[in-house]
Length: 93
Length: 393
Image 1 (cartoon, each protein chain N blue to C red):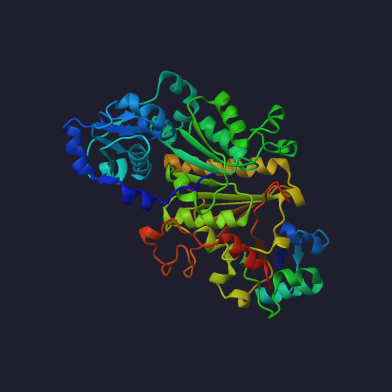
Image 2: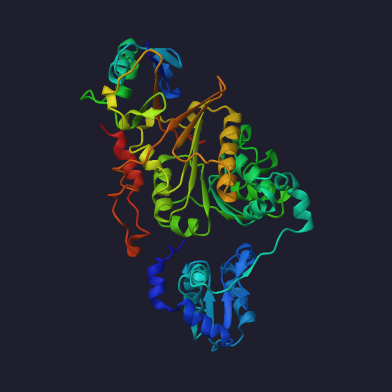
């Protein structure tokens, strides 16, 4: 099944896992499978309307799904879905 | 501190001459003053001009032009600094007949008029940079490009520190540093340009000291401030390439907007915990920061290093990758990270590369993005509100 790469800020919700296998034949299905297995990720990934949050970038392998078919983009076994929020770092909390 | 007047207002008060008219006056022997910095003068200048740095104007202009009724023509890089200098000379220093050359030395060169240009390297420089010039892709020509480059580092912290050190080592002629912070002990785990004995010192000053010891060829310009909508255009004006090591999203979005308007490339990186990201944004050649991140994340998805921690070496790895991009752009070699987002995971020591495309709906660089008229150039959206608004709902 496809692998989801979890960004550092979400790893607390996946028990520290940086990679999670999640089943689905589209990117959307894979992400929903992830959210089911790790409910803490759901709120970060999806808005109340069920759509992907605009501030989360999702890639299928190395392509932004926005230039493919969004959440309907097909996913196969050796695909990697990358979740990517922006980072700004900074010394101050 | 008094706010700086918008440049359009200043220009409306003073006399401007175009390069053609300036040339005629110069041929006729008018007093010509160059209101730039020494490194700019050394790179290229108009023959017969005397350099008076903007911050020395009030003190030195009477030495250079003792007769206040004498006609003086000023020039700078694009006509902004010379306009302000002309205004200062007439309103506060008692000069009666001052003009600024519109468009600066850039317009002069565009018109095809001659300038006095820099020569090659000194003997010491040939020795210092020999390991660069030995590389066929760099050579003396490439090294001269580095020596003439002007790079602005936004942030003299985690990313700025290693980037500044290696860019200074490489002989980048001018390094500008934007940072209003002072050195803190907790910085020293990764901000290697600073030292224990400089805790409490302004970061730009500390960085300047380190660079001076490493490479006296480098002209370091301190900008002890934070970038905001009022100062950003004036600060970035004097630079060719910008390194984004900012610690917050509003600044990144503002910098993106300003750099696209002025067509300046930005090498953007960020670090947190064990991860880093880097990409190179060249306006209209590739995507911009807004294409990549149309909306900022809410605070809980973007903690600071102060909250979540960061492996010290991450600053080094990503800062140096930024320096690498600068050198490629400045020397015109290799393949910069345009349209490519490089992710580094230091725990697994793995690099991942993602493709970034120009967003056809990008409000900053997209084909339907509003064209900014000259009069609106210095006005920016409120990016603090933009980022705060994204956190709601």
